Length: 208
Image (tube, one colour):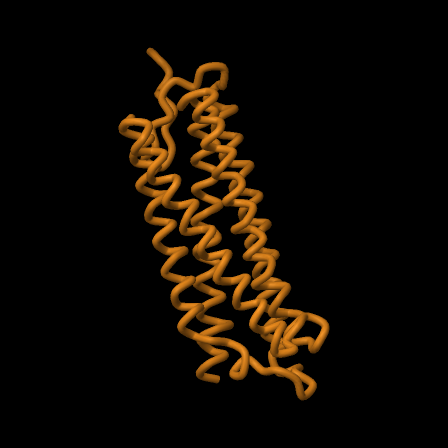
C-alpha cells in the first residue's frame, strides 16, 4: 500500500521531494508553536495596556489621540490583504499561471505597505502632539502593543518579498509551498491581532 499524499488544510503539497512526510509536518507544527508563543506575548501586552490605560498623568488620552476613521481604513486594508493572500494560496494549490500567483502576492504586499505607511503617519501625528512613548504609562503600553504589531507586519512584508524570490529561484516545490503556507498563517494571525487592537484600543478609546 502506498503512503498517503501529504496534505494540509486543503493545500495540496504534492510530492515532498527531499522532505519526508514527518519532516514537512514537523516544520508546520513547529511554526504553530511559534505562533502560539507570539499570541501569548500579544496577550500580555493587551493586559498591560488594560492596566495602564488610565495612567495618563495629565498627558494625552485615548480620546484625544485616537482617530477612528484612519484605524478603520487600516483594518480594511489588513482584512483585504488576508483575502488576497488566501487567493494567492488557491492559485498555488491549483497550479494557476505564475503571473496570477505573483499578482495576488503583489496585491498583498501593496496592501501591507499601505497599512504600514498609514500607521507611521498616525504615529508621526501623535508625536507632533507630544504623545510619545516616554510621556506616560498609557502611551508606553500603547506603542509597545501597536508598535510590535507594526513591526510584525513589516517583517511579514519582507518575508513575502523573500518568498517571491524563492518561487523565482526554486519554483513551487514542497519547501516553497510549506514556507508560503507558514507565511499565510503568520499573516492571518496579524489580522486577528489587529482586529483585537482595533476593538480594544481604538474603538474603546473613542467611545470610552
